[in-house]
Image 1 (cartoon, one colour):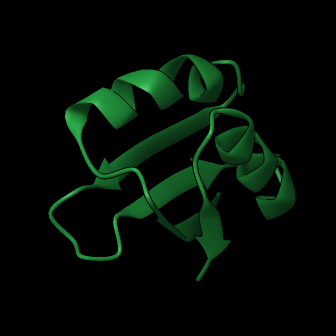
Image 2 (cartoon, rainbow, N blue to C red):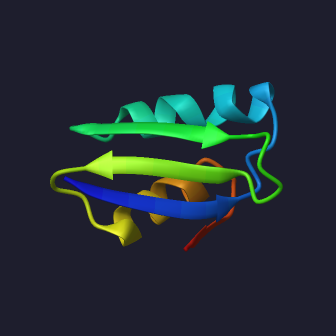
Length: 68
């Protein structure tokens, strides 16, 4: 399983609520956002997805994602 980390601007509960439907469409992943971290780190674990697919999904939800 691969673990990807992204610096994001997902910084509150409302942001997580907004991104959740988009992330839940991705199959076979687990994800969480550390909103206490200044860089708002999104961590995604996936067997099959590439980082670009995750980044595109976050951006479609209206947020920025920069892979670390």
